[in-house]
Image: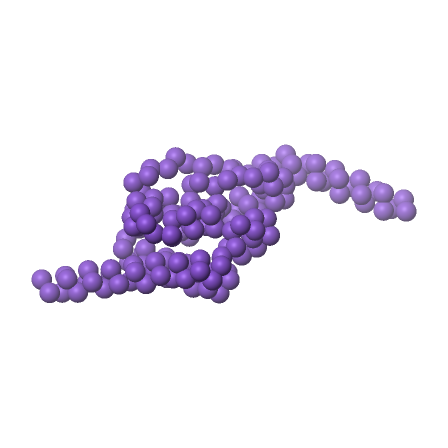
Length: 159
């Protein structure tokens, strides 16, 4: 019993000390002209879907909720956001070439279809879960981007 109390004290002390290690939780300013919203149809269901299910990790509009301030979850969330923004950042959509956009949307379709995204994050935010319709919306945007790229390539070949 005495060892159990000592172990509990050590765990509490380590947890308290862990709170002193604060990862960066920054949201850089967003230029609306650079976002994916500025590059898709205003009637598209894609943007609200991305905001709801992907925005916390793949944009500069991250909502840093209470659990993102408690170690070790704060470390995991900071890492996931940093990595997510490096992979694809919907706040910097204009920085990507048409080929990159096409590839990113195709990968997003695949990841959503296979259940890879949004992944474990749904344990913390159930509203980020993707329905079959949500997955179809992402995949339709991917197919539309592919078709536009093909049309553009065909037009350039005719010149």
